[in-house]
Amino acid sequence: MTLIAFGINHKTASIELREKIAFSPDAIVDALALLGEKTGAKESVIVSTCNRTEIYAQVDETQVGNIATWLADFHGVDASELQHNSYLHTQNEAIHHIMRVACGLDSLMLGEPQILGQVKQAFTDAKNSGVIQGDFDRLFQHTFSVAKRVRNETEIGANAVSVAYASVQLAKHIFSSLEKSRVLLIGAGDTIELVAKHLSEQGVKSLTVANRTLARAQAIAEPLGGSVLTLAQIPSHLKDADIVISSTASQLPIIGKGLVQSALKERKHKPMFLVDLAVPRDVEAEVSELDDAYLYTVDDLQQIVEKNLASRQDAAVLANEMVEQQVEQFVQWQQSQSSIDVLKNFREQSELQRDMLVNRAVNQLADGKSAEQVVNELAHKLTNSLIHAPTKALKKAASEQDVQSLSILKDALGLKSPDN
Image (cartoon, rainbow, N blue to C red; front, side, top):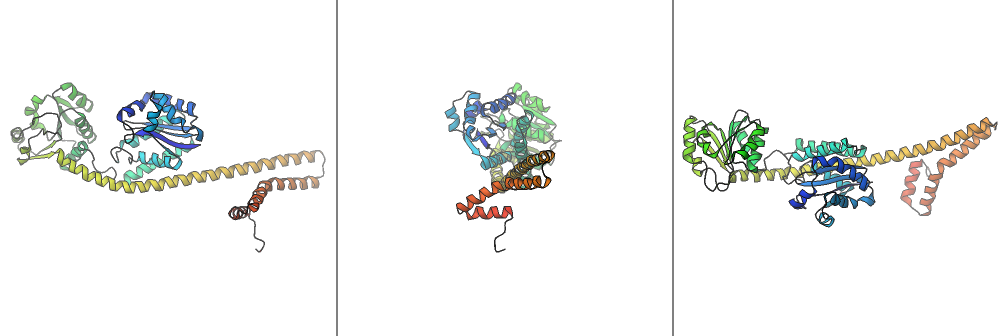
């Protein structure tokens, strides 16, 4: 059987193709069953996220090429387009790829932590579907252990590499704990939605989303227990905010210096932290002139992100070295298992020959044959049976003058040189 990792990701395929190839959670169980039926896959796991769809499988060498055909047929896409935008890793390269994916080393955002959870879920789905056996169980448990070590022993995920996350981390540094902070988010696009999720993960309890369209604001705020405002209501509520993060498509500033100055006066000059993620600006630059207002722009955060990304890239070097070591360790385990299987087969075969000859000897004794004759015959036949295969191997190595094989066979059989 051949271990393969076949798929497409953000580096090889357009978002349109990735969308076509993606598996919904409801389709995974049926897909795993069909994969085994159509390709003879012994074990398989399907990982499907917004940035990648990958199939990890144990298949017969003759079936490797059929994986791509099956995936194209399942989603009704052109097989040649899929082949052109995909990649295939086999055996040790496949193990290496699986581990790098789980560690976040192959992600769009280097070191992103979500992928490990997604791979774990894919493995759980496969196991619950009955398509996981000993080899894959060991491979994925080893992979999860590697990913955990990379997280704990490197800085791969320690620093923010998106402006949304960087803004939340910066707020956390300033306020120490965000649980008691009151946060006002302005806008309701993807960036603000991501900021809201990060804030919720940091334990923020008081969250308000202001937007031109209340329905969109509610879609972000309500799942997180937050409230909503219209943009027109901001002036009367700004005084309540400890943290303001804004990202809209407005062509003119939404928050001016005068508005912040009035809010600070009502707050009795309790500091206010403002992050402007918009281009053009949502917050007037002059706000930074106020003593108790701490304003950061998207450019400020981008510098942090670039510095952190460089730090992650340094950490990735160490993480890759760890993955290389763990791949080698797993391959060594596989090879040891192969040796165990060979020894097991050799022992079983030898015991089968022994039992067959012993049964024959017992029957001969029951028929009244001389015990001495039976024992001699048993010893002779058992010896011939056990030395038959090694004798053939020795003769072959000798006739071919294969000195290395001959030496290995002599050591294995405990044969001494004539001069010893």
